[in-house]
Length: 170
Image 1: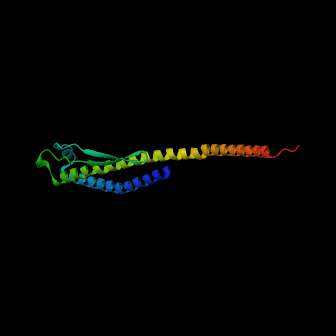
Image 2: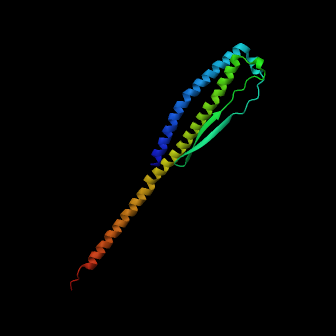
Image 3: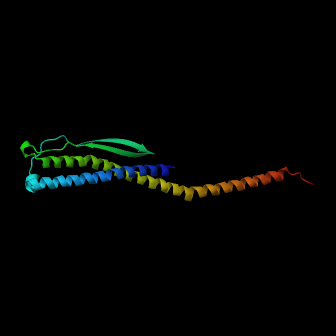
């Protein structure tokens, strides 16, 4: 039962991963396109030398859920894009690039949490399956042998009782 419950948890996380992965790829492609547009307008040297304004640091909220003793993390990250410190240097391409790059963080964080959950669930599934095989291969045969020995002992006691109950002929 534990194996089945953990396998169900793995399938749930795989479905979440399958939903997040294409979104991250699309956001990464959009960020790459905006970066190329910004580099085409400003050039690599100017784009790399733009002084950035102070922005609040990225924040992440991590909620823990449990599945049969396995901690599962759900990560919600937030990021405010940093723009150039000088408003005169801010172009639409630079703003789009900053926004697109900031949009990557929440998706990457959620995907990282999902992949960590998958790894923990897989480790626990393997451990549980190994224990189940140990029970099948070692403990159950020992229990069967002990049950056969007890049945033989009970049969012997029944025979002894039957002999003791028989009237003796002299």
